[in-house]
Length: 324
Image (cartoon, rainbow, N blue to C red; front, side, top):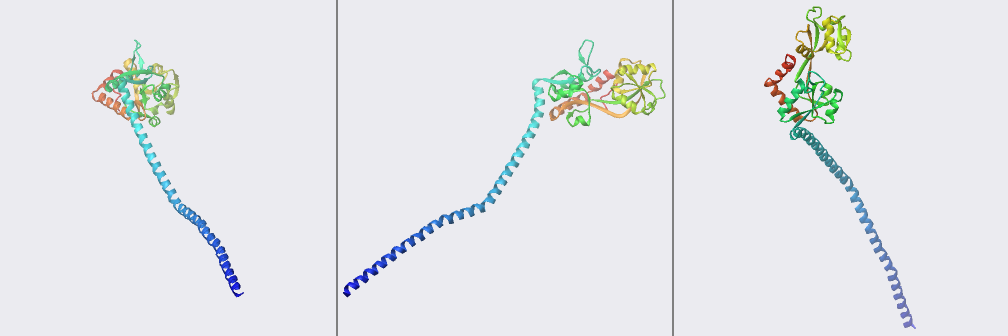
């Protein structure tokens, strides 16, 4: 009986120990799983923290890289633009030389500068200067006769390389185009009969009759000095009215007067006074053609140095209008 009780107790103890072991095993497994589960969370948190910390640095690096890239691109763009400007400058002159032709815009109806003679040949002071410049450049002069109103547009559209047609240098034009050195200097001229002693200065025009074309700027100038305007069709008619005594004076540029006197040396008219302001005419060239400007200036310098410009001026006007 005792032996059976002892055996039963032993069996009970063994069963309890077994049950305890079984109940503790899942707990251990659960701890293991919990640790395993927490490991990825810990790792992910670590990665997120690391990425978040590095993000500003990465963004800064990216902006810096972008800035450097932008600066590099801007510098490259500026360099390309500068190179392009130089190339255009070189290309215009080189293309003129390679084609062997300098294309010149001129009116062909503007005597004595650009007109057709009795044989219908294009000639004139400016036409001859253009031919001499082309010769100095080692090319042939080719003229494109164009109305004045379309002259600048023709240069813009590259119908011709230059305009040689008594183009006055003005600040407005200089902002858009390049000019050569001047080859003509003109002043306003107050013209009267040779025996007129009442008008010696522009101020003396007040109350006097001045023969002017109403479409000319000279009419406005005469009005500004207080003159009464006698309307005419142009310079020749204005001079006729002065000679006839139907007008006291007329205003125009001095070169126009010199051309008239060259043709009619016995005309009973004189220049009573000249304006202080000087109008300068030069070769008109598209902007960005520094090489062409230099080449034209060099040609004009040589033509001035050897006396060719003075000779040409005296032949057309009886005086030298190529010096200030």
